[in-house]
Image 1 (cartoon, rainbow, N blue to C red):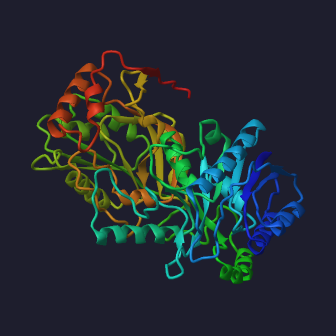
Image 2 (cartoon, rainbow, N blue to C red):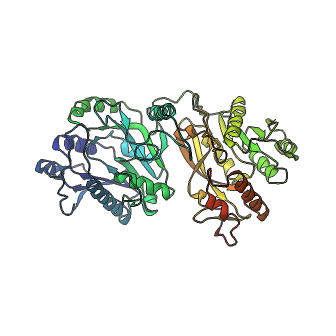
Image 3 (cartoon, rainbow, N blue to C red):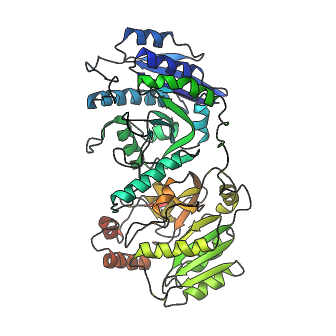
Length: 518
């Protein structure tokens, strides 16, 4: 059975703490081995009395708070007043909970703030998300006159819009992307985000890999949750938010009047993992997968091998030939054989303006009316296990994007792994369901523009364990050619990493065996 530690640092007014504790006692913990842990950091004796009288029917423990902070925590004004030292103190409490979880073999630690009212099935819902770190969403008016906004964000201190590397947005585009992000979170699902907190389930794998709330000293982000999120991203731990069962945030005293309505709505909410109704563009079966690819002068490379492999599990292909001068087009037709496919030959190459090329690829692929788009490069090949997984990945009504890990193969059996070559530690979206109305705007990047538009990052997403081999570095010859190409097209590393470009021809790179059975 799954062991979960439900933990909260508590410094709260009694009228807010009472409903929080009531919701903890009402949590559905059936099928789980659960315990509760608190740090009593209250300065109000009434709150301490409430906390120590709490009996949820599972074991409860108290961790000592240490010396008093000597600082007030003001929650009576228009917004809460947090001082950096108080945030660091709370971060220390949270790290102690994580250490208890790790030391005592818990499968997950659920960290929750003491001004929330939880849906009874919250813990089961977060476990069902199946990701290392996941918060349940809640909505707050940070200022009384503001609209309700989520406690999750995309990047920085609290930016609610996706932003590509090197991308600059005007005010209108910033607002449009932020509105789309907020609207997405109103649809039940599980979504990747850049920042989260306050109602977060952290699995043991994340704790063991170093997830922590300790201050990241060379950043100027305020708040222990931001330190946690930055460190998680650096460790390759994706962050997600679940929006099926939002919590109620008792941010101000007037929010207490919302509790009865919240509980009534929670009583009729769908079961864990089930959206209220499938989105109309999602199909549970019969989904058509279209391979989408850009090629240019690939006749002497791995293109035929890659296409023949992909043809065993996709339903059609759309290939954009970017002005090839060799036999690339003929290779495409021969390798795809009887698979329905189209090759679009451009009159001139757009490779030096990749964002334009990706838009052309996107538009031609959409014209083929795919249910799902698999976007691969001409030197990328999945493990054979993809054939066993692909139908379960696409024939479902829960998510619209699937991400994978990609390994930069330095030869046929080894991949590169070092401080500049670590792409395999993160997941990237390669399989996507084109959602009606999603923005198809690429950053104006001449190189490394991204194979899907940035709005893809807003889609509900799963990660898949099947690995992708990037074969485009696997010989000395192709490495020399690529380094020369990047030096010519991006000499200052504006669109990528100049240090990585310089490292391509390292004489003794760190290589790791690619275990076919892993």
